[in-house]
Image 1 (cartoon, rainbow, N blue to C red):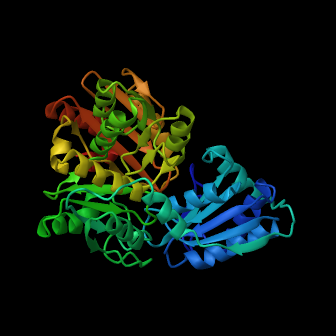
Image 2 (cartoon, one colour):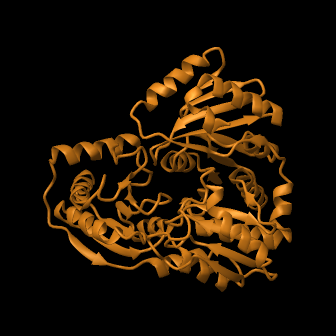
Length: 444
């Protein structure tokens, strides 16, 4: 399976991705950006230092001045690119993927990469027609500057709040503890020691099983809320004071309500996989809800083009106009500010939003090459219904919808279903199970 995905580059270290391929990617990216300046950062995965060294070598040989900004969360990497005003950037990370993975988030110019940019990069690594130049390496750690920058957006809280921070042994644990503590929170750390093996849980906080320790700790310690980050700190999940996971849809709506009150109603870009409650609630608040295909680069690009107030994905990415992008730590601090200023528990804020009948994101391991054929067969089987192909195949029923799509970051197929009632949801799942019998055990 190709390491060149729709939004970034990633694969299993030593199987799909090694130092030799990394060097070629560095040469190709330096060639694409014509030797312009680049920031390079990395996460805490065990393979990151050696991969980072090789990509820097490739960039320098293609003529780029490389600024090594150190080990830091991905949002700090985005900040550093803006702050240092470089044209390009490479973050060595596999984000929420398990420890055996690694990869690269690349950016150049002002907008996220497009699929065709990744394709062009892959072609260059194959034909090896690289530019030659004499670049240089400068070391400039940027984590402390990022921490100062984020603190400027917030004031100390007005009442005592306790937060459990579950960093999953990823890169943002120490930073999150420092920022929450500086703003007056009582912090209970959980898995905040950086360890690229991620020994306590997988780094994806969008999977509820990975939050079981956080849910338990929040209740045991009588905390007001809990936050869980992914491996590189650009995703966040929330747990209320009763140990219940807040859905990303409700997270988007809570943020939108608060920001609309503060700045006036505006545009919200949201993930194609979200419940229809997002569009309904945003519209009710006087805003405009804009649906976009799943995937960080797709959401971020439209968010920037639309000059939206914010954007959100069910994966736990939250984007904010103030930052020009997504940031799990900023989102966590903003949720704390909302709880403080509204003087309401997180469960109370969530209960103000209607419940809906929707499945979790059903993730089906599917390392086969016939994914597109599978989607086409689904489209054919449901041709009597309205079909939306913005991202995968979304079948629209009178009382709900069903979606099947190919993940842009992992060898999986994802499915999700929503109904107007619990019975509608059950029927829609049954219809899909009958149409795709090979996946029915996952659907049910």
